[in-house]
Amino acid sequence: MDSMIAAAARALAAGDALGALKRVALRDDPPALALRGIAMAQLGEYPRARELLRRAARGFGVHEELARARCVVAGAEVALAMRDFAGSPRSLMAASDALDAHGDRANATQARLIALRRLLLIGRLDEAADALANLDARDMPPSLAAVAELAAAELALRSLRIAPARDALARAHKAAGKARVPALLAEVAEVRAALDRPAARRLFAGGEQALRLDEVAVLLASDALVVDACRRGLRLGAAWRPLARRPVLFALALALAEAWPGDVDRETLIACAFRTRRPNESHRARLRVEIGRLRALVAKMAGIEATPRGFVLKSRRAREVVVLAPPIDGEQASLIALLSDGAAWSTSALALALGASQRTVQRALVELEGEGRVRSIGRTRAQRWLSPPLAGFTTILLLPAALPFE
Image 1 (spheres, one colour):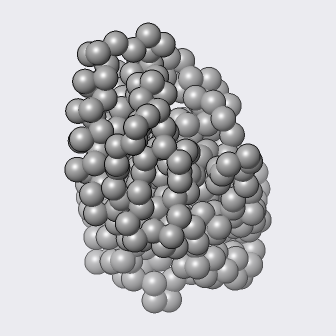
Image 2 (cartoon, rainbow, N blue to C red):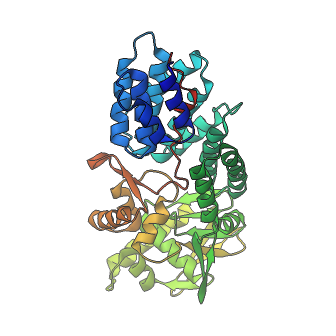
């Protein structure tokens, strides 16, 4: 490695992208192209950075596998920063294996973290959890340790495991402090702030109560029967009955829960479930059928009994029946609540869950995307919608810290 390349690499490792560019801006050899690409990425010029890194990777010969693998890792992180998920992860994993084979454990770990963060961002949470479990945390640099702990916190929060999430955030804060990366410290602070913001409302006769995420978790773990209008389902302890794809049954369950311990007359139930103001005998017959389906589905959680005027919800093991609603009213709030599980939803599935037309849901999603409150991946029929990640996942670009391009 010549002195100018070494000086540019040290400048990049210190966060001085402009200083690095001054040293290699006029050079077109592969090491200089790689450093220019990383510098442009640190300056936010992602398309230009991607092109430079591709040119660098092509420029390294067949005997320079280590250098080419590092370029692939940096290019994958640029793609992650651009939220471009079109590429195959196979090349990234091949680069990780090559880095491991050459003893570059830091960049190999970086590659695996990029793959993990990609899974989180496209809503494949089970695969992300497996990737995190298989991650070797021994001797991990502080910056990478902070990113790994942020990913662990994200996964824990998606499943409302608040205590593990707080522990992961504490470890992330400690690691980010050691790394002295302000963006990482800011992300940890942002996730901690999210824990203190209202996440849902508990509805009761005559009022409502705003709940933080930890309070929601305590409520769901209690012996109450929770009709969850955020994720559209019923929960009693560890038992969960999803009803997001059965909007009629959920509407009936919600109406019965809101009236508990009283009953609900048949006309009100018909209006809630079928959205009609003029019920007739066919609606009443259909109501009996749907009540029968709901009764069978929640038999282990609660009973539904007929009364002279309608139906009443009878909890079995639950001390009480609680309705959990999104933090604000409205269709957009319901969309955000449904997407809060971190999974990828199609427009048709969201429309079915909300009992609305696809066009109505599409308009609401476009508005929310413009505000940065939801995001999409894919196009046309393959398009899916997700909530933004709880952590922004800073692009670390570890490559210059260990960039001896032999």
